[in-house]
Length: 317
Image (cartoon, rainbow, N blue to C red):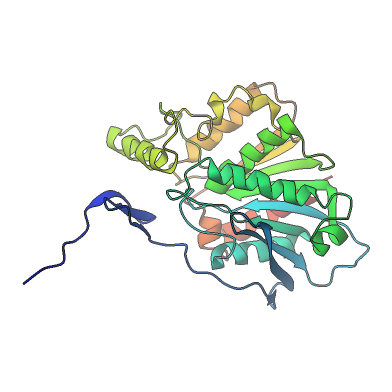
């Protein structure tokens, strides 16, 4: 009698993914999707638009239903989290978060799909996100392929935002905009929610346990096999000589008390201020909460307060 052999595990990054030695990848969460719709709770409408036909990538647009055609709204470009491995703009968590944020801030949002590791290693996620920004930029003169952006987006009031790995992407899009300029796009601010930054040596009260740090480094190296390690600029912006070239005037950083990435967010805040960048940076720490709590538990008191703080950031003159 033949018995099926259980595939050998190469890397177990539960509860995110498991990779097997035969090359199979099991993604443990973030695969559920919801269609675009008119959300009756927020009165926000959404639709999906292809921005990269060659890679089959779309953005999900969100807009308040009763927007006046003559009213220009601040434009948010949002990058979802998931450690570069999981989730999308179409998962219930991301979709619902964007609906709530768009309703609270009265903005139009572009939520970006990007290719994910390990099938598509970093920097694919960064390259795809820049392609999405080029697509957004094509609407500056009102003659782009998407009517909602042509008609409603105020390109003088553009913001980048993301959670976890999406915050990492938002930062790098700000750096690239600072160097290459998205012509006609005024990026007024970037909001980073529990950014996924790391480094080889511990900072602040970051965990010092060798096994823990080795696991974090392996997690990163599998996502980005070409990386030089955890002091690569892709994951450690403090090691980036271009940090001062961040292409916006305001940055808002959120950290959470029980998040192991908390100290790294504070470190980023300090290094950004020391870099010679001429903008204004703020940081807010939420007590008693963990990583991306506002995505996982959006109706809790602290999540509602965080959402309102982000909305105020987008509407601050």
